[in-house]
Length: 273
Image (cartoon, rainbow, N blue to C red; front, side, top):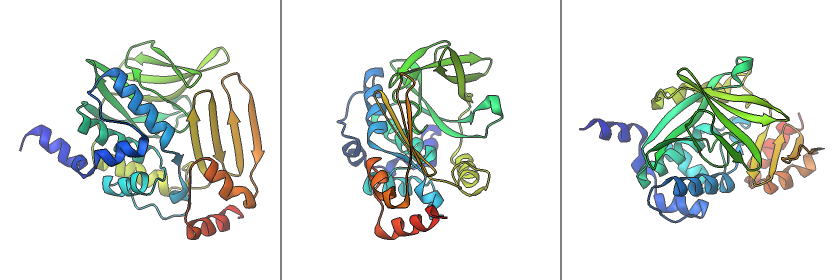
């Protein structure tokens, strides 16, 4: 078996029905290119919600690719970074893109956790940061070029090289804020299993104690965090509205998260405290 074959086997890429995935995000097969990668990533972010409902319900089945496909593709649900990242990486590889699976330290200026899955994908001979699982963050890929600034749905983002590290930054007012930092060291599947275990079970994880659902589109960021619905726009305007239990289902549906009656009932019990 070749080294390349071993790598593909580690991630069980052949598990993915590429046509089913492309149907889920409304895309056709296209020859690998930077432009095609941009459209693929954008379509994924627009179609698949970022959400942690299964973590809150303590019913997450794990991040094996087949489980991710069952949830995000077959059930039309969303997920968080390990689910988005592993699904997009598999699709990109099946389409012919070289993919490197990475991990990032969130909010490095605050000693945030080294737990976020992100991707480096080559297109037209250039490495790109592709981060489809960073909540209401990135909409399109960014070339891995020091100082590169890319508009992300109306919010400028920048990549800065710092030795072996890369920092993803977002412009807020006149300042650049670090969102996460990463190296190009490739991860193994077991690494993400460890990160996922912490993220989905540890009491200090930001995903175990409250609902987090995020959607991003051009000029609009919508989030349900805990019991608050937050709408933000690139001009700096922000609207925060409390979400009472009787509005939870409608708010989730507005964010494209549709639960079964059993899941909703269990979630409401937790939501009411």
